[in-house]
Image: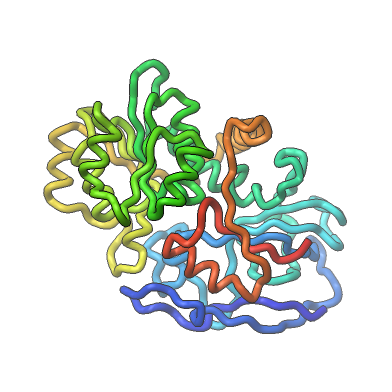
Length: 347
């Protein structure tokens, strides 16, 4: 079988933004016979995510993330359908997902690496398994629950950076549902601000591209900030932390503003921000979903119910065709997406 795949063509500079030319589309052939334990899958949707920028480097800076190798097929979150199977865990017609799905139109994968999913959990929106009812939703839900210390009736204010992105858009809605009286999102365009407030129920939104962020933050959070879901790091996070209340909590989820820089993860903080954290007894703990996978099944069911009932609204930016995946990845790294960036590969 002739299939198309995407390989890593070159690496960005250690302090450089990725470009579409870092990826290369090529044809390859799949072996006709399946070995014991293998399945042939047709790719339906692929996910591109900010953490993948680290995988473009020779060293990812994280022991749980392997770097992509030059001239080898790229991989990440994917969902697809089993077309033929020589394994006991999945059968023809099953919908399956994996965190290590190759960027190919079809692939032969080990059945042990595939997770069967029920389309009814997402009312047939199979791409949601890569976002709101997948790793992204789990990161948002468990990040808020495990590190945010949100308490109903406590009059708490939550701020979310990268709020119109895949994870931030879900995290803000979780904060509101869990009892925050005020949820404020920070994002990069007026259009995104409008979506956060009018569609997702955020109390207010701040456009870091146009607004004076410290002033707007004071206006939107008159009682200070109790919980900060941090997806971006950098100057934005310094600004939010400066306005946090004593005993507040920072959920350190991502640092996308720093991913194109040659710095360790998490990136070092300024002396002033470190002093603020210490003086105000603010917790700032890195959230790693892998540490909470024992809670994943229960959390995924809750996310499914919230999405199906309309309590959580899902935002997606869908690009068609494997040939456009490099462009979509680079656009996402610059904030070109609203919600989860998805690549649709086939029907």
